[in-house]
Length: 300
Image (cartoon, rainbow, N blue to C red; front, side):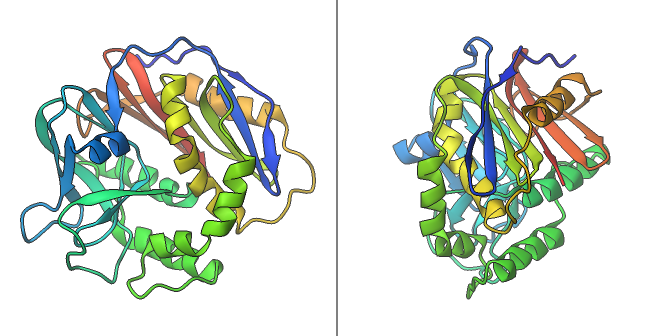
């Protein structure tokens, strides 16, 4: 059984075609973990290729910390033989070595730029996460693990690059984000974290397209700007809304997380994973010791 805390939707903050609804409520979670960027920066976690040869759909994580480490679906890791994004949210157990499922977002490079991966500060867009959620669920249901449609991922990287008039010698998603950094920074200064928020619902134009919900405000605060990069990149392609999006639209998508019939599937790391699909909506949830650590839904 998957239980969600009581959450209410706050008033939106908006800029151009983006509206961000803060999700407020619920006590602080009691699961102790580090975020991947914190752990990588401190040196307690290293992320590397699988052996010298490497393996496109997985990476090796060595966690020397005494805490769990949380990697988020869609976060980009930059370096080694090619940049990757996480296929699903993963809790890496303390003092452990494990493999995490990833997708390549740099088709034209297979050579070392560094031995270890670092954080890029970028997060996948709603379109990319839809590809991940839909194809990873199909893979997991078939007993094939957390594999994505790699061709579909590359096609989305290319589509976005063309749409935003970006170019990259290695067909890297990060080059498109870097090319739009000035615009991304402008949006970020206007769409700041809302104190007390444990999540956010993102509306592009007149449609709410994603929800991310965490177990505690401190996690949401730390990942807010990174999550916002994916939302902003979508916003840069969108047209202004003809009318403001209603709060009820965010409440409806949040209700989808709460009320749907979830199916438990093997987690990629510690804890339990749940998923559901309903038409154009795809969702996943990572639970540890009975507590929701990260739940999300995206819709096209």
